[in-house]
Image 1 (cartoon, chains in turn blue, yellow):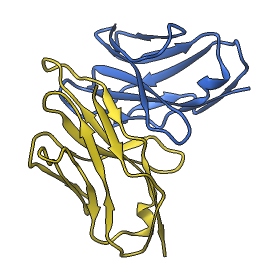
Image 2 (image 1 turned 45 degrees about the vertical axis):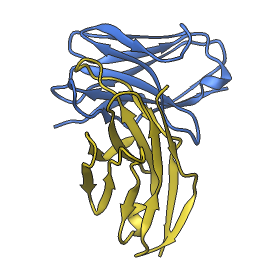
Image 3 (image 1 turned 90 degrees about the vertical axis):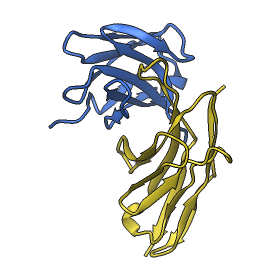
Length: 111
Length: 115
């Protein structure tokens, strides 16, 4: 039973570029949440998708957007990248009222 | 708002020592509480959880008790191993009408166990 998978594992971009990160949830899970983890910090909630809609959003600008597909997989898009966007981006999946399971993340570096 | 505060690291222990990592929380309603562990270069793994007051979560020798009166969820282990070296995150979640909600994390505590 595959867990949460994320791609790519590492990514290097320059300021102003756009990036798309991908996540496949654990089998049977229908809710996907995205978190940003800066170096030495705890993960910060970006947004959550359920039934292909954004259900909750954290304190992140509109440059951060996402999508959930009918197979429950999800994408995180970030436009106009800034140096401060450098972080580990974590995807978590879950079922209603159940603990979230995390992938290994995508390490995004902005030059 | 809801928040989690955990002791700053690093915590450096010798193998077989007793471990305590303190965690306190502020939350409205009745949160569920979690400990996640992050090994170098990896994502977060759920270590243990407790969903109501006085519940004790346990896994792999780690324990934590949900203390509503002191709003705490301290992580303990009787005898640590080198393989326990990792960053430990305390987290809470509050439920909205049964829907899955966002996790709120502490800043993490680095544990380094020396042989």
